[in-house]
Image (cartoon, rainbow over all chains, first blue to last red; front, top):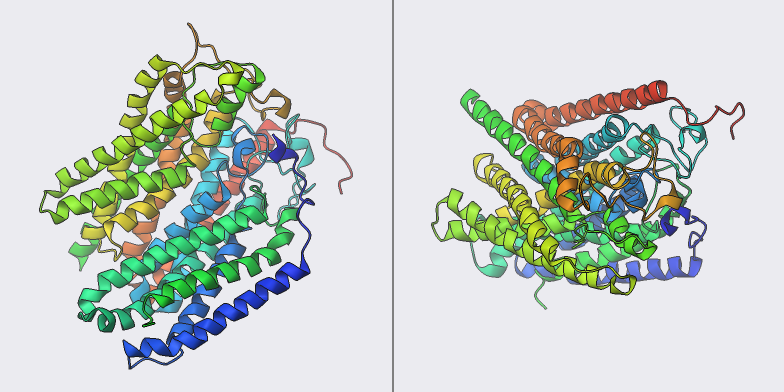
Length: 289
Length: 300
């Protein structure tokens, strides 16, 4: 059970050099995006020369939202499954992906209603999934196992002020989902769902414009291909960013009150670089090289 | 218009019911197979000197595993439908083939993981392999079939733009996430550590000392599936059923209200309702179960 005893201090320090290198890499990737962006005009002469660059920036913002949002999701991993640590008893990347993809499902459905509506719908879909899941987790802990919620990282719940230490059973780090963890889970689901939907919409608009010219087919014929390709890239980017964050928090986190949460700036830079690289690949498939 | 909404609500209810069965079956399958986080204890026990007859198949985390199986089932069903095969038959065939893949993974995972424990004296029980694998496959089939069917309903009857395989991947991952989040603690704490005190977490010092004996003879994973299905499985089913039902319900009924803002407002209201329920459960537990130790006067 080394995961329970793991101290957040290990690996928690920021490395300015690595951050600077990450930002330089991000600028280089965005620069490449700026260079190749006018090339898509070959397939879609009517669009703006910076259309693909805007899509790339949207993908980066979406990826950063996913990476940041995953930090909020309370995940306890294996120790949580034995009531030895607070959080949801599954992997952080998996739970964040489950919530975010449920949001992406709703956001994609609302795509025709405009970007703002779709992104907000995606966020609410992710938040809804997490709210139901977190509530059912506490339901099972309380009514199935007779165990109240208790945090192992703070003396009092930052929202409700409830004391935590005396509700921890002997020999454990806490258990269940204190209210702050529930709220963190919902916020994580909202950010993840919104980020995934934003990636999907940006790539969908790019593919809708370029695929008919590139494949010499009608827009109606290109639509299913555009939806599928944008959906697959959105799912892939979701997993990339969720797994990056899982490494950043070394597998488990209680939520926004956990000291590990302070590591988020590192994940933001990493998510931006990874999303820029993946987004560039997603754009290059419609660029004549 | 009204007929469309009534049709949509009917499909939503059916999809919610299918999701409930899928969630329940998924959790029971993973508990019989000891997939998910409680597997750590099944793997740890022989290393602590506790040999057992529990099935041990952590193929992957439940979400990616079910993402694969549901995507495979949906993709094959989609291919069969493209070959003009009846959708019902196509979904059954796709789910059966996906279940065979699950069976292969389950077999190799059990043999491989248990063989890695040979140095601790843990044997590979061939009778366990023969009797448990088919049961996990049966439960996996139910979960995959229900998920692929609800994806097909969402795609064809409700008109979601994503193709069937992509919907299978998304809802497969969501199914695994909901099932593992809700069901894992009940199997991991309540069943594996039935010898520990009720109403308290498992002390870290007890790790690996899982219950290995039943009323008669040694406990096996069928006993675990029977036990956990009653609460863990049901709760997982309700969790995934609520997710699918409420997500579809708010979209079908309220998306056209206020140019899309209706579904958003209803979604936020539902989140707030679940927040209140969660807080009620938390406070109820604190009041009725009480603290384990005396309340400290001064806290940091």
